[in-house]
Image 1 (cartoon, protein in one colour):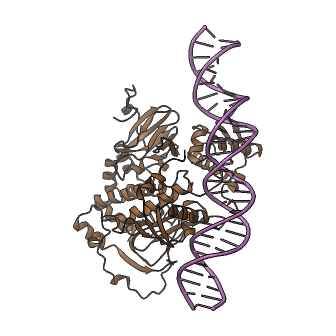
Image 2 (cartoon, protein in one colour; image 1 turned 180 degrees about the vertical axis):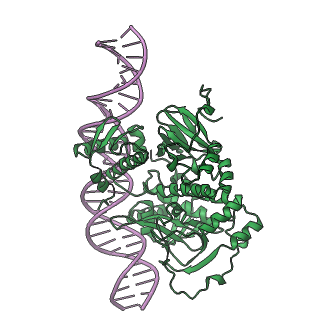
Image 3 (cartoon, helix red, strand yellow; image 1 turned 90 degrees about the vertical axis):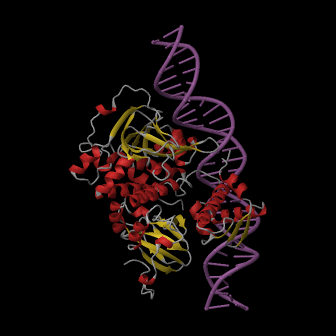
Length: 244
Length: 244
DNA sequence: CGCTATTTTGAGCCGCGTCAATACGGGTGG
DNA sequence: CCACCCGTATTGACGCGGCTCAAAATAGCG
């Protein structure tokens, strides 16, 4: 039924659930909860993993039962359009939630696949909502997390040049990784150029060319999937100056 | 403080709040609530209007106090980027909610302006959440409405040709209007070409040209802002066939 | 060491944006 | 009722950014 629920030999229950001590706590659901409330929450959370590259967390039309918090690794969400072509909707780093768009019709609206070795916390939605009724701050947190995702979607909506898109993309990854305790300037892309291009609505070749151009201009250092941001300020200017 | 709260001579309290009898009930918050719960909800709702074209409902960074349900008319939400250029985020028809993206940071994330004579129901968010804690189905409704907005944002994200965008835009308007009891095939655009173009990330001239082309091909009839969809099926095909 | 997927690089083309001019319509004042 | 004005919409000419097609370079892997 649920994908990648193959007879893996990992007993999910063995993994200790400890939102209270999780380094992602303030990014994830427990944000702003009391100790007692966090422990109630913990009792609902099931850890799941490890998933490997290309393992699916869920697929379009899977029944919606839980939302997922990325614990480690990187996920990609995507659709397949009528012509059979993939449409990357986003990349999801540790501390970020996946599956919020499935609440409405109670079916998953996209596919979610691991890009590398990854693990997630599974949050059964029905029980979360029941708990949220009794804990106002949890309800509030849920509303905020949902609201944040609505605003975020506007980020890439503008009509931007290839350079602007790629600069913004790199900066977005960097800042999100920074918030999770990783380096702000050095990052390893978990996804191939094709996925980046698809996500940014560009051709793979264009992404490649812009990477090269950025490197020649001394803005970044590129070695395969390792990227170093050398001139963050210049990138920032590039990313939100209009193509006037 | 709140924009367009000029000394209008309309006493807001005079307008009868009756979510129970509102034709938009099943589109709006009361969706799936019991009679008793609806009446509790009604006691929170304040009607506001009429607003006139160019009246702002709220602006970026206004403190977030309420979400708004469009009761009549049409609204546009937009941002102004660093270069001072407007970015249309969406159009909002009767029965649709505005301001959900402001829950998170408790500030409005965009500007909302009436395109024609319009009115809204104002739903004080704090009281809604308080009520939602006590009425699980209201909480559920809120989650669903938020979730729906997340999914919707993907609609225009693809890289589509000008014709695909415009066909999809017209179909989206038509289907939303149909759900609200209006004609499915005849519609009056409340917004100028410039706003359509901006929303679809196209040039005004391109929108104009595609309208003309569609008309020559017998797909639509256009008279200024009145549009008639003559070949809905063909438009549908056009809108989601890949540019292969 | 060969096989394959990924990435890079080059050449040519096309859709759409830009610039510019014209047409249309609705409102205002004489 | 007409002349005038101004914002919106249409139409045409042209250039460019990014896509397509094609091929070579590079890396990972058995």
